Amino acid sequence: MSDAIDQAIYDLVHNSDISAKGISSRLVLNHQVLINKANPQCETHKLTVRECLAISMITGNRAVIRAMTAEMDLVQKQSRPQSILESVLSAGKEHGDVLATVQRSMADGRLTNREKEACRREIREAIDALNVLDESIVSEGRPVGVSAH
Image 1 (cartoon, rainbow, N blue to C red):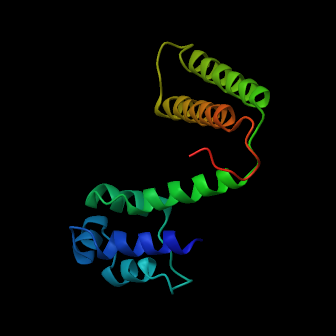
Image 2: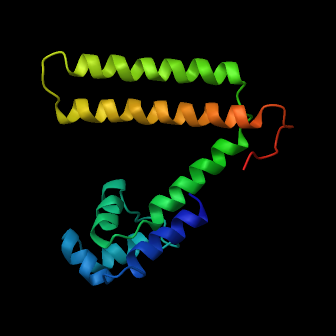
């Protein structure tokens, strides 16, 4: 895990408007366990994704979400840009996946929570594919490694 994410987890627990004790009581989690899970030096106790999300929602602190987004963007930017044709085909495929998932989910006239999540996952993948297409268009003709932004 990156140092930025470890620091963001620490900040989430220790630098929010709600104290660590307040957070632990709202989560019904032992205070010391929460402190251990937020400690970047502790390798045996880590926050689960659900705990991290719950704390973010309780505190309104989005530090971990921002750190994760930055980490994912960094990894994506390090890979070679796709050609415009590859990007268009990928975006079209993802759009088709959205349509197929929504159609399948609505076949019985109702949308369950699991179906909503499947639709939302496909939509996020389509958005990601469109962002890659946008980057491919902006990067067209640039040497590899030169950022478009």
